[in-house]
Amino acid sequence: MEIANTIQSVRTLTKAARNQGRNIGFVPTMGALHIGHICLIESANQQTDFVVVSIFVNPTQFAPDEDFEKYPRPFENDLKICRENGVDVVFAPTTEELYGDENLTWVNVQKLTEPLCGRFRPGHFQGVITVCAKLFNIVAPDIAFFGQKDAQQAIVIKRMVVDLNMPLEIVICPTVREENGLAVSSRNKYLTAQQKENAALIFKSLQKCRELIDSGLVDTRKIIAQMRKILNQAPSINIEYVSIVDAETLQALDTAAGAVLAAVAVRIGQARLIDNILLDVSKK
Amino acid sequence: MEIANTIQSVRTLTKAARNQGRNIGFVPTMGALHIGHICLIESANQQTDFVVVSIFVNPTQFAPDEDFEKYPRPFENDLKICRENGVDVVFAPTTEELYGDENLTWVNVQKLTEPLCGRFRPGHFQGVITVCAKLFNIVAPDIAFFGQKDAQQAIVIKRMVVDLNMPLEIVICPTVREENGLAVSSRNKYLTAQQKENAALIFKSLQKCRELIDSGLVDTRKIIAQMRKILNQAPSINIEYVSIVDAETLQALDTAAGAVLAAVAVRIGQARLIDNILLDVSKK
Image 1 (cartoon, rainbow over the protein chains, first blue to last red):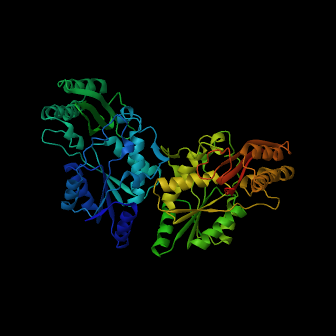
Image 2 (image 1 turned 60 degrees about the horizontal axis):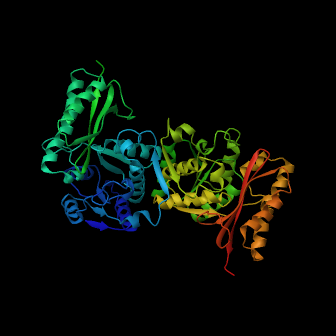
Image 3 (image 1 turned 60 degrees about the vertical axis):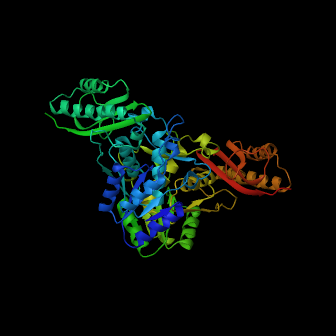
């Protein structure tokens, strides 16, 4: 496994692989790799011939009051995980290497970045979209892999790739969960044992949503009320949003119909946690 | 020469050329090709092995009150010019082909788009930058060629390429002028013979700027006053701006020093015309 710290060195490595006729798979990460990332790497290994993982805690997607400073950076362990999982190249640039002295160019996706996390994390998606555009241009992958846990991010990045005619495919991999249903996340490290137990209510609320829709309820106001009731069982949970939206446009739905995304964001202690499920609401 | 109307067909053609080991040169245009474009094509032929010219009147860079509708579209003559000048592929997509149903993704360059034309054409650079990002991703050139006449556009596109780590080089070719000094432009077609004569004052004002700086004057307020005096000789000229700015940051200078851009924008009759010169003001 090669470790590239510069743009030029990762380009040289991927170019050589491409010249050998290998397809490039890319898994962009902020490090603190967990089983969710490993599943992305596994998908990349299955679908491509040469796997690049970037490890970069991207400052431009954190607001000043967010957890950029304390975000976990277990770099050596991340390298170990990459090595054990058949990664070909780890790209780990410094902020200066990636952004230079001053970045003036920003990529934005309208509409899709407004609801859900966009309302609570101003500037977040601009940072995510811009760094992905940069990384895609540097690595030039055939396929990039993202997790369904960050549903809005996945939809926004997919849209950027289509709108800007970027020559790559985006593959979304299913959310990986702990035994109690909690979606695996680097930010779960911020939780105490008790908080982690409470955080299981997030997935419980999503399961309730599925159950209610399966039973024929389509009034999203009623569904959301029941989901909130579950989350409110733990006083340590502060709800940011509980939303039922169109899975393509991310616009809020009064009536669940078609491809639906049920999404939850909460704060527990030091952590902001998100989760979601996709539902196909067939017409009755 | 091939004519490609779809994204897929131009990609197939450039990919085949690339697989043959040929470098791709790209000249993005809005058609109405003139000697300035031909010089860009010539540079592309000199520096690369396979030349793609795009012809696309990009609606997103025109404000509603601007000349999108009446912009000249002499497509057959443009093809003839391309054929005669060794172009390999003309890419001429429809707006629907290039933008789809709805474009949500926009690329912006901060700061550099604020002064000069940015003040007078809100949204213009966002449209230019975004369409260039799209075209670069579609054509995947090694080098793209732009004219110095659109100095701010050239600087902004260069910056976008650097900031987004796009894997191509931008080459800027000198402004081509008519005999009376008027910079060649598709919009010169809007001028009557008399207006064209008056428009020669634009370059005269820039020559005056050079002359004054050569003679040791560095007070830009005084230089600009003299430039304006020349432009005001023709009452049909409405000045938009006469600016002396840092050639890299485009920030206005009180004192001309270092690499300097002197830039003029005027309206004459139906036309909005711009021109500029680059000056190296050595320290005395």
